[in-house]
Image (cartoon, rainbow, N blue to C red):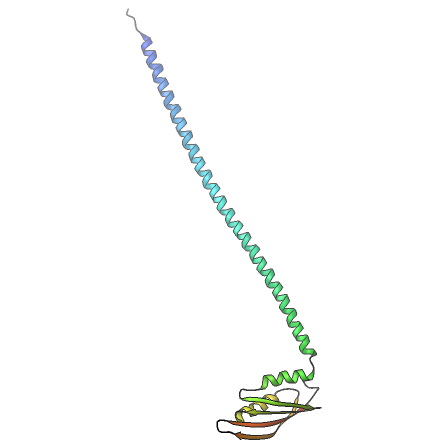
Length: 183
C-alpha cells in the first residue's frame, strides 16, 4: 500500500482556516470600525441638535429678560406719568380764579387779535385790545361767552384806526364774572 502524505493536506487545511479566520477577523474589525464611526457621527449630530436647542432656549431666556426689563421700565414710566398727571390735576384744582381766567383768555384769543390791557375791579373785567378785522373781534367775544365764569359779556367800544399801510380796530369788552360757576 502506498503512503499517503496527509501532512501537506493538513498544512494546506490549516493555512486555509487561518486565512478564513483572518478574513473573518478583518471583517469583524472593519464592521466594528464602521459601527464606531457611525455611532460617533450619530452622537455628534445629536450633540449639535442639543446645542442648537440650548442656544435657542438661551436666546428665548435673554429675550424674556429683555422684554421683562422693557415691561418693568414701561411700568415705571407709567407710574411716573400718572403721578405727574395727578400733580397737574391737583395744581389745576387748587389754582385761583385769576389763574383760571387768564388761562381761559389765553386759549380764546384768535389770530389777528392783540390784547393790550386787562383790568379787574371786583366782579368786573374790562379787556382792551386791537383786532385785524371785525370778524376776529367777534370770534374773541364768542369764545369768551363759552366760559362758565363769564356771566355777561358786552362790547363797550369799537374804533377803527387807519394808517397809510394798515387798518387796526381798537375794542373794549366788558365781562361780568360769576364766581360760583366754573371757578
